[in-house]
Image (cartoon, rainbow, N blue to C red; front, side, top):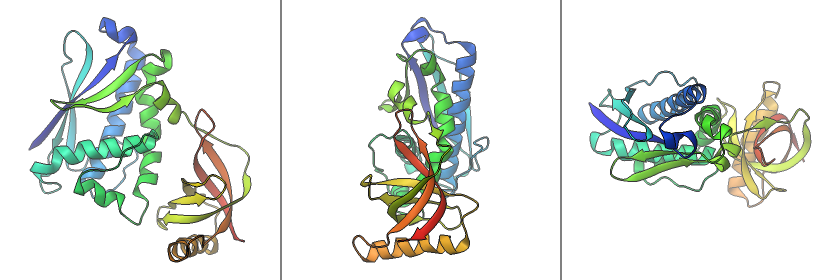
Length: 269
């Protein structure tokens, strides 16, 4: 069995004295357990996103005794299904997927480096948008000690290589989300990616001049969903094409930056 060992290390604050508030630590460990399980499951199961994050098909996560002299938790990811991914590429692909998906969720710049993860990134279906939503709550929980003391820093460290992910007060803000109660009308843009089965996708928004993830609400009709597919195809064929108007609730970060649209209505211009 392939074993991948890494460390979750807490820096500054109470961690410098080799301790953490018990409740904060428990919430943090639970968040990391969910986020790691969701990511590891996707790695071993062709990008399948399992939201509850309590079971990995083809793998297992274990915690090992903490090291003395610091607040550092050792974690071992064991690949039990050797047919899921090659032994020689498993570690590199695992760290690459963690860094890519978590960086996207935390709005950090990073692009996949391994062939295994690039295939997920190049899918027509918006894997990363659905993955971001699945990781947001676990990664907010993982940063619980930072809520108590914004000087705390948490890192995931790969043995003999160094830091994979760094969490601090700024990354906490990116997953401290709130959805508007009111609906914003007539948002102009076009679809760049869309999964008709899951209802997740990405929009290029003219006013923002950038792409934003979206999710279709239950009340959206099948006719309106067809418009999303139309928009995606026409935008690919014609520059500036496929424009639609959307009504949506906005999910925002702590600083008010739009993270996702929850679309309630779609119409042609």
